[in-house]
Image (cartoon, rainbow, N blue to C red; front, top):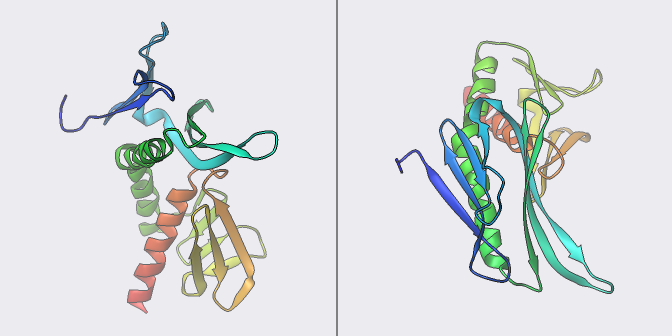
Length: 203
């Protein structure tokens, strides 16, 4: 296996058998289930267009009995590949949480940093574009006709599950994006933070 390949094995909840293997390569992602009969699912890097992720609670009759770590990957054919790691009664909670974080890291490192760079290059050549429902202009961003924010007035508040973009002088003018619901919210967050930081240096 070469240095551009990362393999993540996900163990089953109640035994040490491997339930799923994710292989991250520059040319694409391979998802396989060793215990099944289906052929490995191969997703070409160029067809991966979006991802989102989060943690949801698993509720029993009277109380919460576990949590589910989830990651959704979207392709250019509008197909959604779902990765789920469900922990019940604390079993595998830390391990699944660690694997979930590593999968997100590998998705970013192998595929989505390229998408980030693509949009950053569009901004640098003064090209208007839209990302995650936010329209980018060289002078600022907007999400409808009444909410155009110049770069020097943009503030960002970052939280575990979401982030909020708002007018530094008027917090009522704001837009929030959630990592679990909005495709490529993390790409949007990274791009706005980068541009805002650069603009501050130039002021």
